[in-house]
Length: 523
Ligand code: TEU
Image (cartoon, rainbow, N blue to C red):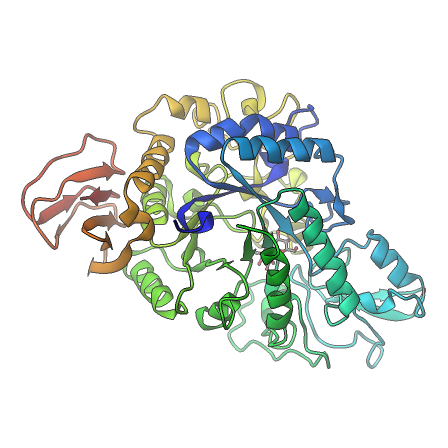
């Protein structure tokens, strides 16, 4: 039997936006508990929950003030333990979001570190003297501006790859590594099934803090961070040693998974499987988020990714997360269905993002409701991540059944029609399509464990085959709004599922006509 993280689907929850249980307009753990049966019925295997630890919420939980405490806004440790127990009872795994690159500036470690230059925790963070009256080097924060904050009291700068309220830990200090290993064990002891590790490629930086080079391809409409190539501030060769150590901790326990969040080109990404597959089990593959949405580019990305995988490295695919525009906002409602079919039929573990299964699309955030600190720092440039973080839409009751209070972010306008209850009764709806696709994965091992082989690629259509033993399934995806005809590898195939809103049409020949925006699975 293959490992659960190879055969199953991962479902990401942004906890502030999934389900509120206490009427403060912000989702919480007891809300997630209430919706576990929905997730089990949807057929996903694991739930990855964005950070739920004590946090001042400057970056909505990605700024942690206590790694082993539950944020009171989300609930209590008892609520968390109940969540894990109930999830396990339903056959669902729980993956936590570990943010080891930086803490909150409210973390006790940082309070101590900044209290004096002599403090034993001074070296837990990256402190430096300034250079020529300015910061120690030219590094830029991911949210814009210098990545160095001046600390008046001790007369030095500290480094923050993200907000000033998110100081980077010094992973070259063995005490930091040991402390973080204890954090992992704390949660693994409580039955957690794995971690998604935030910005794992950032953990080690150039020890000499050399200036980053200019990015020759920088365009003024890009974020400030893109002015420089992150040559010395991230993806340092030494990072692999610390990931091997993290993996060893995870491997002290049975059947756990280590997932890395990594935004890097393919060749660099693959190094995060580890030389002996001893780093992350799944280095997140964001290729589909970064490629143009057309048959040729998607086919090329799949081909290149498959070719780049190290021997034994298990593939994975991501179609959305809390940082990236939603798939339906990007490619439109019709192509979002094709994308769903692609995600669930490619070779590799799929990660779904909450709300994509009901096709949440573009949500306009009025200026007075902006929450994302990045949008506040670099306003009006369209980098804001709030549109992909709006509340889940459950039913027609007030606030879409998400909360009894006004939610922290607005709901998508079409929520009265686009919600789980309404779509559950609609055979043609996107939720039914997702359910069918998940069921087909469960019924057809070829879709999970089979090989991938591109069959036909045109400007508009991608046809590929998934083969395991004597089972062979063919997937044909029309990326265009026009009807397309392609020749299949053989005649006499039977359609199993179509994204088009019409009954399956049996056909006998090898000539296949796809309706506009139609994806088809055939056996
Ligand atoms: O994101 C990492 C990251 O690189 C982001 O800057 C990402 O590129 C950006 O949001 C646009 O896609 C992770 C978390 O997922 C994000 O929510 C956090 O803000 C960030 O780390 C800091 O912890």
